[in-house]
Length: 423
Ligand code: AMP
Ligand code: GLY
Image (cartoon, rainbow, N blue to C red; front, side):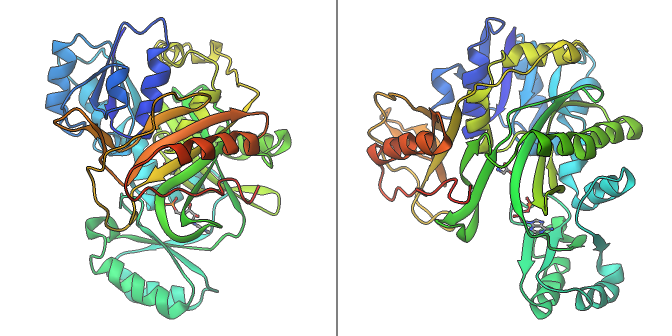
């Protein structure tokens, strides 16, 4: 099969790495890709949100399957675009329809969905400018911290945890006043849940589902989970506290009702659901749904998936997902992200990267890199590289990833050495 993978981050490099190992893969194209994906397939300078350009590529390269990495094209309806296409309607798109992607695209939609299907999540109310005063009254009656969420996609910045009612009211007004643009024209006010988070990834065709290896990511920039939120500074898989009895609760109380709900609402859903969970007094609650795989969790999860990923996608597209059995590598994986100095604030790009030769025991996935005009590998984003290693425990895996992180150089390099510190 000729495969087109959309996206350009560490998640996509890990997907490209896994897909390119499949005997079913004849050729792999990545749009737009990065310097890492270029060694596994052909990068194409096409914007995944320009569906016409993607369709042209699908035709010219005789693509047999489209795999969508990031959320934006899904929320924009790339699945529906191809399903309704006059000549390309038969090409499977791995990813949900626009309606299914609303589980990530609208926090209010996701909360209403969870409420309808009895899926455990924090209590909430939603507000717009039309009931702003009611919102302020509601916030004033809550016990802080108070969680405010911009309804729409806000590049991971739309969730605020306010320590006081005053701050929550100020931020609430700012959100409805346009702080996050149209993403914040509706605001979800949510009960704060205290617990430890973890991530579960499910591959589904909307009826059957398969659960991938569980992971935990680390979002804060600073060691000990301090400082600003980032796209993700590292991940481990599996997660020591997520045992079989907890996974059984997750499956019964959350995954099954979610898949059931998708069926009852009639959403076309042929892709991944990422369930962000929090464990509160032994019980799992949903913090959020995403309509795609997580980054950097993917860089720890896919190296532990022993199945042929493309065979799973192929089975999904042919309605045979139920026949597949997920096989997990018994080893642990730990991923450390190297970021540009200054990230998640301002940072410089174009810094030459050295020390990558001889990967040894570790896998190095590129997040934000490119080859410059002189053919040198340079930084091209906040998150630059993802280093994954295996070990009998995540600590052993982490020691290897940290060792590798030390050997790689670029000006301003920073990474957290304490991934998994709370496990
Ligand atoms: P989200 O963008 O929905 O993943 O939220 C970002 C982060 O905010 C999550 O990973 C949690 O750490 C935190 N968060 C979101 N909702 C809640 C909540 N109801 N209670 C506590 N923390 C939350
Ligand atoms: N690792 C969290 C995310 O991908 O949204």
